[in-house]
Length: 88
Image 1 (cartoon, rainbow, N blue to C red):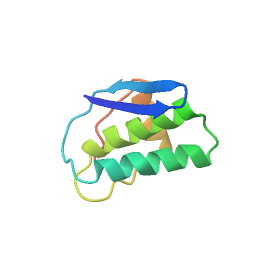
Image 2 (cartoon, rainbow, N blue to C red; image 1 turned 30 degrees about the horizontal axis):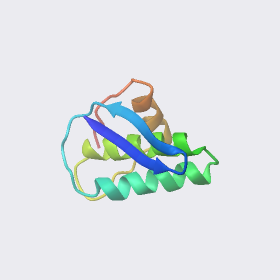
Image 3 (cartoon, rainbow, N blue to C red; image 1 turned 60 degrees about the vertical axis):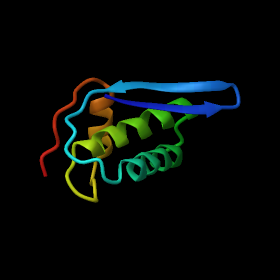
């Protein structure tokens, strides 16, 4: 189970939880930050940036190795409840 939480000027935001198969914990924080940057550059709001970042970090848990070449659609599938383990 993976949770994302951030403090905002108006209080705290919680992204919810995502269930994934944990394969590797390496670079999860980096993936989460990359997800935040990606969502921010796409113009998503604060809550959606947090949600996307948490989903990206959660998916990284399921990918072996230093790199997680995730597609935006895979993150949204996870966030919408359609998680499938990523096989690469």
